[in-house]
Image (cartoon, helix red, strand yellow):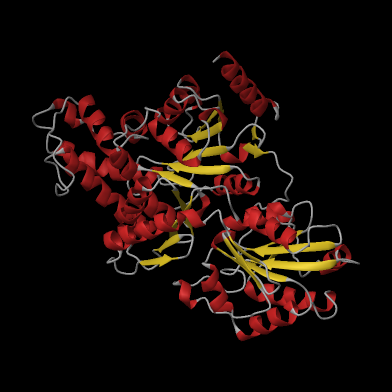
Length: 540
């Protein structure tokens, strides 16, 4: 116990001292993951929540002011919200505030109509006000926090999100952040898992468990007093408070190791290029040409978002005739492979170019024209489990309008891009229930998609390294190139950090392990065409 405490103390000191006590630095050496609170840390929904609470409570108090003197004073956002409501599960926040006014109310049940007859009724009333404002105003994101998360992902540090709100999935989808987190534990999970909310540490501990990391090697970023108290109780390695409301002293008193005013003050020890400095692969092709001098070039690509634009449903992601011709011409001169999260046969059918190497399901299945075939033994034992999970998902949520349950050989993707956003929490709850019954599977996130995958350490980066070795391309005479656009591509981009060229496709800059950037699929095609003369004669 003493050695663990000493190691944690050294990690905290190191994280804070790297920037002369003004900033804090996260290093891969000390931390495997960072867990974020949602409201006030990642998204700017605090004011929306507070306004919804005030309207619900003020309407309620107005009905009791004649019989209860304490009800005459309206709900105070600066005082009542921060003390009684912020960071707590909805029902606990209501109970805390009503107790402060000496008002007793029956709990009721979750299906109570929005109103004033029970705690659940007030909660449903407040939630209606909140969702109404979200639909009108949307969700703002703290860009400094988003950049910090991107930096963590670029360094291979896992990320998790926690929230007492049942609307967490809706908020993340509305802000386009769902794929930024490896795990999510929210208000739906509190009920499902029957665990207490903050200030108990259970939500953070559950997120760490799902991430597969030890709390002692995990940092927590929180803005609520109840959150830092919970992280301290869970013995997390570093508790960072964000003082959005000039509450630095309170955050320190309740357990924060260090308090900052904004995530921009939190650094990540990195050796990747920052977003504004990342050069265009097309504008700087002369540099790439110089690196490729006297070397064989091997090019590997993601499919969705790289060779084809992101579309509403996966079957619409069709290779354009121009892109097809470019890829065929390139594959005749150098090895070209596609590493996709799609099932191998699916992406192979969509592309339909025999001269390519295909790695599907993030590399669980690999095949190519030169006789290479790795129907990954790592994935085979999971097939019966995936079969059962697929049946359960189809039976439970297959009827939902706009939902698509896509079975890949080594994964199950649940696409919800066309689903009513109000249905998303129930969809995720069902997926969580299925994964809970099949602990051999893990839940992953993508762009408007949840995915159940085999729960083993395998990703696009490992698939890329396997391909280079299997194809005899793992030596200094070869320049491997990888082009991708998604968070899952960062594993492959990191794999080439010291041995090749990583290129990211983005519409907005973010920290990445890539060396160069492209704006869209049109630029991908243009770059591939520039590689054709560089690769020389026909490829055997």
